[in-house]
Every structure is written in structure tokens, then in C-alpha cells.
Length: 362
Image (cartoon, rainbow, N blue to C red; front, side, top):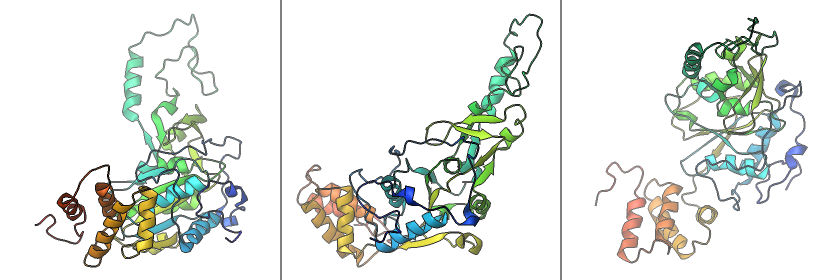
């Protein structure tokens, strides 16, 4: 294993992320320069879907390991393409676990997703409701004082809770992308899943954020004179993140994995800012499929071999995904208890070709 590799695709977590050298000059970021770095539990595991069992290692080949390390060194997003079920999303969990970078931040994209969805949410309705309730509360007995501000961004003794500088942090929460761009000392892992399903403008909208490593929350910027620093909730529920004058700037650029099933092409300006990796199909690679099954369903034994044989035979004549193989292995396991003809029918049911225009036909 060459020494330059920070991520090595091994079983055990380690601290080689500390050996990552400073970024190229054009990828330096200065978030948290005032000492207000965000905090994260490096060994926490998120509850995202499709996670490998904690004891299992992701089976990354040499090219995948090199692509991950290239993205880490250059502080660039990694665009991973390939058929469904080849492990695009699982790679994010593997990197986060091995390098001890905390829980993966997941952003699932659909046709209605906008850039702001990933950056932050502002509960304007909640703030209006609180302001309405405050107006109906009697004013506090403050003697002769009518001051509404201390001049330090804190409501004065005569200020009702609905004052313009009431705690805005109650109404702002960072999205997965916004959390990844908070000033953490080490890179967070962000998975932007199925970006090819998003709006045509989303890749271009991401360009400026990826280049600057920063974004603005206008609702906090407008109140910056009254509340220069606001504590907001991160997407993963960890410790609050301090936002100064409405600006969020990363310290360590996050390790970003964008996945694509190849449903559409991306603009050249977007592609040149990404490290690209294509994961080949494993449909005819018996050893790789066996390793995938062992990682997800360890000890499957005879059930795995029976399902694998059926999968390879059917994959030669039509499109299948590894999810179907895993489903078949589980259904053939002793815990389900199917036998004889039932087993064959279950295999037929879950291993229908994805390019069959009439699924489920007898």
C-alpha cells in the first residue's frame, strides 16, 4: 500500500486523515479563523439507509481508492457513476468510518430539490407565530425603564420576546450541504445521492458553493447588527454551529460524493470541478458479488451460493441489480424457512429483469 494514500479501503478505522497535507493555494478556506470551530463526534454512526454492518469493510478496488484520495488531496467533489446497486452510496459510509469523520450527511435529490434545500431551512411561519403570541403577552413590569436593547444584540429589560433581535437560532437549521460547509477542523462526509434526478440547474447552482466553500443565510445577515453571532442546529443533530453575520464558511472542505445512475449528462463546467469515478457492473463478477453478499449477510453459506448461481444465469440474459441478489439470499436463508418449489418461486419473483416491459408475467 503506497504511503500517499490517506483512505486505504481497510477494515479498521485509523487517524491517517491527520497526515493530509495543506490544500493547494486555490482551495484554501479560512472558516473558523476566529476560533469558533464546529464540533462533531468522530466515531458517531448515522442512521442512514444502506449502511454496511459496522464490522464489514467496503470492497474498494485500486481505482476507487485512488479516486477517493485524489478528491481528498485536491479538495474536490467525487462524482461516482454506475448501475444501481454497485456500491456508490455505500462508499461514503466506508470513507467516513475508516477515517473517523463522523456520521455521513445525506442529501437525497429529486426533481423538486433546490440548492437552498441542501443549505438551510428558515422557519418563517414559526417566527410569525411566536411574534403573534408575544404581542398578546402583557409587558414585563420594568419600573420606569423602556429600553428595548442593551446595544449588544441582546434584548433589553423592556423588550418583548417578539423584538426583531429575538433569538433567530430557534428558526434556522442547516441542511446536509450547509452542515458540511460549517467550519469543522476535519472534513465532513457529504453524500449527494442521485444528483442526475435533480433539476437541470442544480449542478450549475452548486458550482459557486463548491468553489467558495461558503454560503450566506440572508435572514441572519439582515439581523447581524443586533445578533452578530447565532447558534444554529446542524443537520445531524450534533452540537450547535455558530454563524457570524449570516456567513457560513468551511475550514476543511468536505469530502463530497455525488452519485449518478447516468440518467443524464452534466455541464462541462460542473464536470471539470469534480473527480470522476465509474463503478463497473458486478453482474458477471462472481467473486465480487460473493464479497458484497458476505459484507451485507455474513454467514449466508449455501443460500448465498444458490442465489448467486441463479443471479449469474439470469444476468446473462437481462438487466439485474445487486439489490435483487441480496433479497434472494435473504429469502433463501434458513431464517425464512422456504423449501422446494417455494424457493424457486421466490427467486423468480425477486429476480425479474429490470428491462422487462411486462414484469410479473407467468
